[in-house]
Image 1 (cartoon, rainbow, N blue to C red):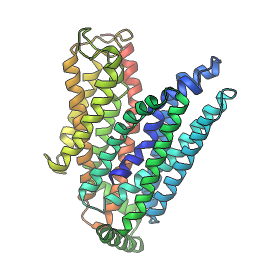
Image 2: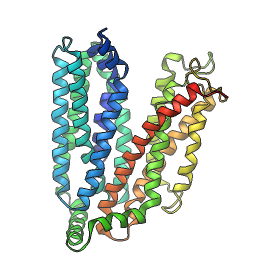
Image 3: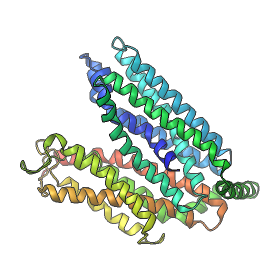
Image 4: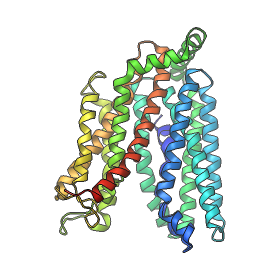
Length: 399
């Protein structure tokens, strides 16, 4: 399950972290439209990623409530993602300098298709994990965080092997294909494990009985009613995190010129590296320490909303902002960033593990996992969208 957690987040992270290949190599022209594509590349990729992923994840929830073969959805989803990555590698190999606009839109269409398939894959695999003990759901959440670490480590390795942006990008995309193929292969090994068969056979039997006797809309409403606190927790953890990271944190500059981390490495270390490492730590801690039960886990999650004003008053874009900087200490900012990362990993894992455990009947656990995965994506999408007005507020609001 850890590997599938990595594979579900690998496509999005690959396109985001390979930004230099797209912006500085493929879209390096000076034509007006190419400059526009270059300037808004990450924003457009963000929308092309999150919206299709969210929509297909939501559709899969309702399709799952009506039955169907979850395994085949996962298999075909991975196949589609791999095919689109092969096309991405092909586009990297050929010379597209004569048609940058066409390259841009083909890339965006491929991102949309990848994330449509990935939305089904992501949602379905959480449904399967929900029928297993809690640690398997946590393995998926942990894998999502590990995917971030892998991408941020893998790209510099590819660049060090060859400084050429095109060649390093080809290696990078091929590595992503390799991980997806390994996940594809291991999925077929799962039915060979007696432990897995014992849990899924019973779940399939319960689901089939449910399909024959019950209105599926009512079953969805039942799940939502039973798990509403945990679903809110899943949503709000990612909403707060994606509002702050990376939109605000990546723009925070060091406050003291004598601070031991230089400007060049300040954001890569204090924002990306620290978040990935400490969020992973939070995922691991949740496996061994569960401070709050399902009923009250949402309380500290609500308190995390304080991270939004905290980072707003840090040294974010000091040359462009109108809002005053109140937190002008690098150590305070880093401490806040570490706390946000740890609590993100800890409470996201805890909430996702609790979702299927809050339904009384085993036949609803898989569906509850699907719903939990949908609220996870809803939180991510809402956080990314909300980060835009927050940054505009910081840059324009007067005190």
